[in-house]
Length: 440
Image 1 (tube, helix red, strand yellow):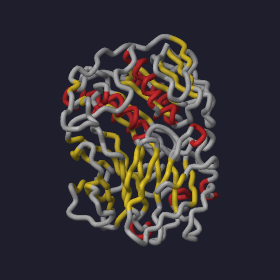
Image 2 (cartoon, helix red, strand yellow):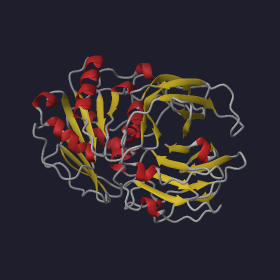
Image 3 (spheres, helix red, strand yellow):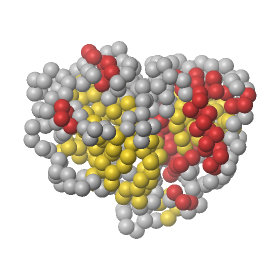
């Protein structure tokens, strides 16, 4: 019986645990310099005996969809550079070649001979295709099936954990027939089945045979290591350019020399770089011609993160989403995301900007499964009208609502979701691009 699966509904379980990997972080040290870091789980002390984990995202998704789960694994001693995610065009692409190369690379680097493979939604189909090849199957020790709908047992008999939810409005709660363990949540939305803390506990318990020591993200090193990919939204095409990183100060828009400047390669890779832990930063993306693409903000990092995604407007099939944004220098256009699930007003979620509630029952329910929430003054009337924007009605995982965020006078927007408060500059959307905000 799994323990600790209560935050988003009780889980039912059947079957036996899969093969067990042993070990807990054995170097957890107090941090006398920060009251927020009563515990430190350092990168250098991670358990290198653990098998690497490789994740395949679903439609409109990307590798950061598993970021919350990866951070929780890292907080329990898993090596963050061995938690990888494949990127592919989710609107018609096939990740098989990329997936196999990624697995071969991490096996060679880690010295292990097998990985744990995880797939979410559309990604589960690609995982099944991968496992159908006996040569590929030999590289996989265990498989985790996340909100992938009903499937027969993997053709190669790989030990499997199946996770689903009765509240998933996109696929049924049915999972893998004959899985070694089946977990069915009651209130998880389609995205939360992959991204939530409860899912982390279920996966950890299955792989390790015990519950994790920590069910919240813990601090890592004083200097966190960040790495990621710059890509377009949904079609996940690499976007080259530069990323200027600024430490946020008291001025919303005045910027001095960047803390660091990182190259976004032609393959979109953002190579590892370091920043101070628990410090607010702004990530300002510029294309190769030095034109501003947009600004991105995360909650101050508690530990290293190797799965960052720096998103740019789509130039492919997903343009229907990004082109619907009305850009005007009189207002700010914000895209809000939540790392651990969809926005759910029906479960008590509240997202406020300068004290004004943004969520409503047309854009933030289990049925909408809203992972990306577009906020802008759609009719450019200088006021917040709320509701749901028609441009996003037929688009999965993405919704929009009319919110006026003035950009004429420089100011910080106070954005609050759950217990996280972020102060985000009100950049003019026409000249400065869209503002992306990721809540933990």
